[in-house]
Length: 92
Image (cartoon, rainbow, N blue to C red; front, side, top):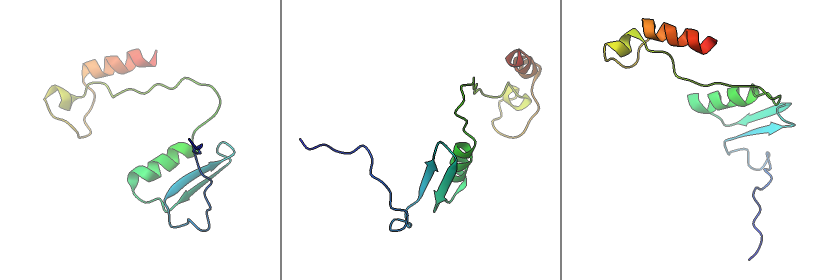
């Protein structure tokens, strides 16, 4: 069977109507073309702030909030005592 390329070069001039995010030289230059909307712009922001040096990155949910204790989801509530304890343990 014929070989299929894993990717094809993008001609930015002739394909300028496409939406794409292009990073050059590991983030030295980032091109966001026809990128609209909250999530695509957040992805551009993430790519712009990536670092290539090894580091530990931890992602976790927030600690338990007062609204969580009451069975409500969402909002901007304060942390419950358990949530504060979780945050303290996480910081260690």
